[in-house]
Length: 142
Image (cartoon, rainbow, N blue to C red; front, side):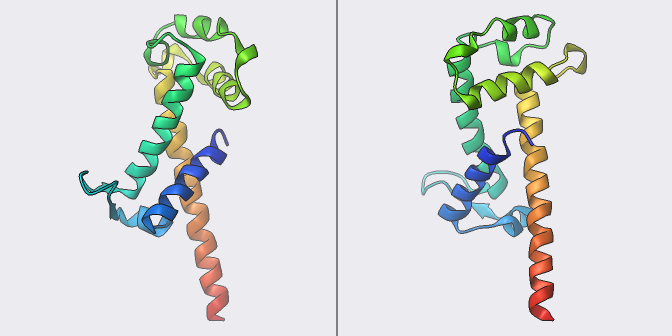
């Protein structure tokens, strides 16, 4: 699944630093960045770290600030013009993902596609973790 490795890293970072886990994601437990910030859900913290990370990558990929927020036919053309020879593997994988999934008819910009993927991966990981947790608890109770 696209970006699963990196989303998992952000999840683990939040879990480690806020002492929470996937069960807390389901319960929408409040966690806090620091003393000055408003409480945020665990999912919001993961989202913030991941989107900050991806924004930096998108800036490295293209100087065209609008590219990833456009809803028109020029997006694929612009993505094709990006010089991928200087990009790292992750940056290249993002370009490939966007080229393969962008469709102006779907009324979703590149950023929307990235966020949809983030939530799909997060939900898949949540279900996987909860299933593993239930299986482990069942084995312990036997």
